[in-house]
Structure formats: C-alpha cells, structure tokens
Amino acid sequence: MNSRAAIPALLLAAALGGCGVSHGPSQAQMRQQQEMLQQQMRASTDQIEAQLREAQEKMQAASEPPAGADGRPPAEEEYARYKREQAQRAKREYEQMQEELRSDPETAKALEEASRYQKEVARTNPSGVTSQFDLGDEEEAALGLEMVPMLLGDQRLVDDSALVQYVNRVGMWVAQQSERPGLPWRFGVIDTDAVNAFAVPGGYVFVTRGMLALLESESELAGVLGHEVSHVVRKHHLRWVYMNRDLQASSARTKETLRKYNPAMLAEFERMDRVMSQQFALMSSGPMRAGLSRGEEIQADGDGATLAWRAGYESWGMVSALQRFEAWQRPRYAALRSAS
View 1 (spheres, helix red, strand yellow):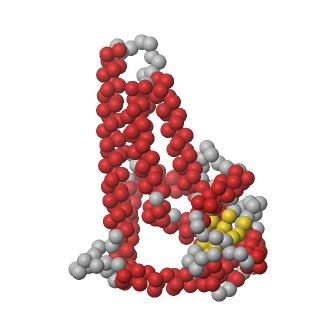
View 2 (cartoon, rainbow, N blue to C red):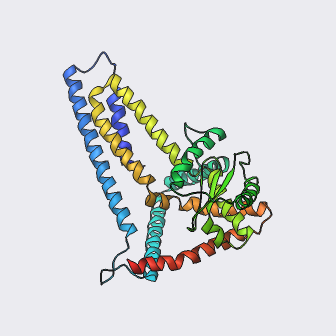
View 3 (spheres, rainbow, N blue to C red):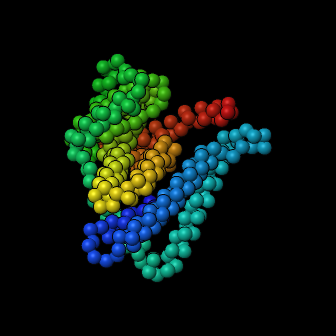
C-alpha cells in the first residue's frame, strides 16, 4: 500500500488522540476539530476511490490489447510483441527509478540495508507469510478441506482406484522430499479433458485427466506435482487468506474503539472500510492475482524440479512438462484470438 493509502490511518490516530482528555480545548473547539478531521477523512476516502477506479481502468486496458485498423484484435504474434513491449517499458521505468534513488548516498545505503534484511527474511521464512492468524498444520488442512468443494464446483473425481493410487504414490514420494512432509497430503484426479493442476492449503493437490494424458513420463508427472506441492509448502495460497483476516480484524478493532471514544467518526470510517475492502478485492481478483503470482509460479517451477530430483526423477521433467503444456496452449490461444 502506498503512502497515500496510509493517510486514513494517520487521520484516525489524530481523531483518537484527544479522546478522554479532561483539560484543554473547549467542547466547541473539539467539535470543530472533529468536523475538520471528518472532512479530511472524507477527502482521503474520495482519493482512494479515485485511485481504485483508475486501477480498475488500467487492469481493463491491460487485459484488452489494442485493436487493429479494422477494429479486430491483433494476430497472435502482434499481441505477443505488444505484451513484450509492455514488460520492457515497465522494466525500463523501474530501472530508471532505481537509478534515481541510488543517486542519493543515504537512499542507496537504506536500499542496501533493506535488501540484506529481505534476504534474511527469505532465508528464515521462505513463504513470506507473517500474520496474527498463522495456522498450524491441522488448522491449515481443515481450511483446505473446506476450500476443496468450492474449487471443484461441478467437477467430479475419476472413478479409477488404480490411477488414483498411482498418482498418490508419485505425489506422496515427491511431497516427502519437501520441508513439510508431515502434512496430510492427498492427491486427486479430476475427471475432465481440461489440462490443469492446482492445490489448496493443507496438502490437497489435484491434477486433471487431461493433464495426465498430455504428460509422457513419470518424471514429468513428478515435476507437475512437485510444482503444486511447492505452492502448499510455501503457503502461497494462504497469503491472501491471512491478508483478508488481518484486514477484517484490524477494521473490527478500530470500529470498536471509535464506538467507545469518537462515535461521530464511525460512519465515515465505515465508508472508508468499504472502499478499502473493494481495493483488497481488486488485488485478490483473477487478473490481478495472476499478475502478482508470477513470481510465486516461477518459484514453484524451480522447487518442483528440485523436489522431483530429490525423489529420484529426472530434473528436466518439470521443464519438459511446461514445454508440452505451452505447446498444447498455443493453437487454442490462436483459435480463440481468430474467433474473437
């Protein structure tokens, strides 16, 4: 969250700072101060709402490539070039910003210290998750079990005990090479031709029948399952659960404090809370989540290959599976673009 988004917290602290003081400004002066703070909070909420609308517009624009002269979407090659140019422009802007920051000796020193700190955090806490709701393995498994029906929807698991046992045998052996072998790992096969694999917290990993048909070796299967095991081990999926719970708990505490000491500010804070919830929902949405999780996917690719290698499989199985999946996607993407 940027510094602008921190403004409401500062205003709230100021609003609560004078509560309970028996000496000082008169009642009229305090009412005037509260009105001023309400106006400032209202202005800050308006600003956040404007930023939220701008972010939504940018997401929409980024998800829709510019149309060609005939109004139709560009060909696959042109769209790929457009996305590369976007990425290169963003990289140049980031590098330019870093150069400008490092031109100041004090800022450069602070950045170096921050980098060392981040490396130490990554070493001691590879998931990067820090929350007051840090779950134990049993609680995480229970949460994952609750999420399974929501993610499966109308999809069914295959009725083939031999196939399920085979996938579980490979998956369990790969999972035992991870840093969390004690989770109640379970591996299921979804009865659909779609090519996909995913996991939920607690050790529940699913691969589709279509994915199994696409893969050509057990090493490739081990790499795919290792990729999903890595997501669970590093608690990638839990990050958003924790963030949402922390946000809700913080909001509840603030509302209770306002009810006791400054009820006049409650209505405006509740409006701000709704806006902040919308902002979090935007961050958690499919398109935004996909963009934010790119680093996690790359991390899971590397971990998946490592876990498969530790389990005795060829380390190139993960790479081979990814190449096969991309080759499968390419003609379908081209057909989708031409039909639109």
